[in-house]
Image (cartoon, rainbow, N blue to C red; front, side, top):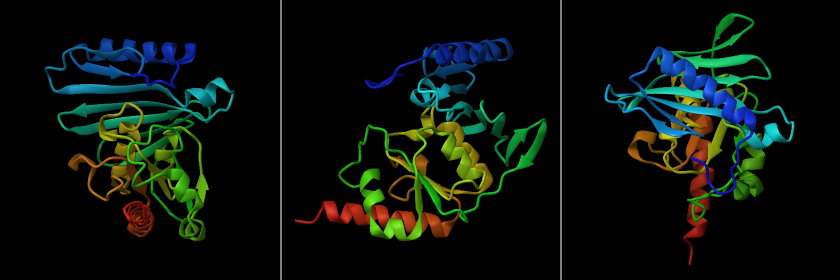
Length: 239
């Protein structure tokens, strides 16, 4: 599951093992796809758990406490339940597939997205498979983006959960097939359950095969970001 620039700390390995122990004890017949150990189990019952034990490993290794633990259950084509935990803020963002919540100090509060902050997280970590039509670094330099939004870069998919929670106006990243990514499946499910607008970079639903991710608090923010993305694509195709 690792790519060339990735590495694992002892915390990644130990956290994954703890999650796997719980899942195997409770659901021994389910399949699991985990970042460090890969796929285990057959999943003949149509249930597959996606496990990312520490999203933001480089942050953690540098003692920057911005990371998340992501777990999502895919039943057939859909993620039915998911959780994204911030171990340092002691918060767990979770969804039962119909609504999204945050648990802190033993209390659950419903999540409601909001674009009021105008803060947009952009993922600057490679790879960039769609760089010919979209590159986050180019968006940062776009005057249209600067006039409407304030950029943030935290390098963890915890920021996707923050969109669902109203702490970010949007999140944008490149990449392939994020619906099935151990890093992003939980955050995407949270945003969808909270009522965010979630598509690929091309504005198409993720299940339609679109690359990348645009998760926005509302239609207006989503439309503005798609306009900026399409402007990049039109420039790249000019003679």
